[in-house]
Image 1 (cartoon, rainbow, N blue to C red):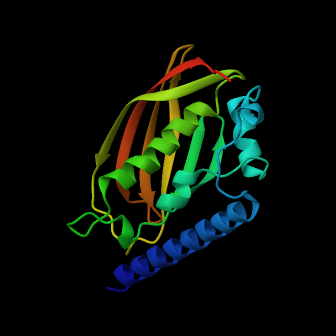
Image 2 (cartoon, one colour; image 1 turned 135 degrees about the vertical axis):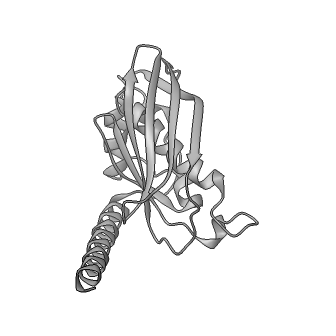
Length: 188
C-alpha cells in the first residue's frame, strides 16, 4: 500500500514540476512576442525559415493571429522541430463537452507545418497539402496545458513530411498527426 501511495505522490510531484516549467516557458515567450499581426512581404522575403521564426521569437515580426484566437503559442521552433503550447478551455468545446477536433488540428498543423517551415531556404515557402489527425482520447479544460510537438521526417526539394504528437504534462498522448507539405518558390 505504501509503495502505491509513494508512486502516486511521485507522479503528482513530477506533474507539478512539469506544469511549473511549462508555465515558465510560456511566460518567457509571451514577454518577448510582438503583438499579433501579419508580417509584410518585404519583412519576410530573403529570410530562411529559421530566420523568420527567430525574428518572431525576438519580437521583430508580429506573433501569429491563430495562436491568440485559439490560445496557443510557439515555445520552440528549430532544426526541423516545433513545439506549441496550448490551453484547452470550455470555449474550445464541441456540443458534447470536449475540446473540438478543429482545435487539436490547428495546434498540430502549426507544429508540423512550422517544423517544415524552419528548414526552408530563403526564397522558399510551403503549404499544407495533407493533414491527418488521430484523436486518441478526449480533452477538457481539466487538462490545463498541452504541447504539440512536430518533427520533420522527410525534406525534399518539392515535398516534405512531418509527424506530430499532442501530449499533456503527464506525458499522456491526446492526438497524433502527419502532414505532407508542398515546397515552392515564394512570391513577393
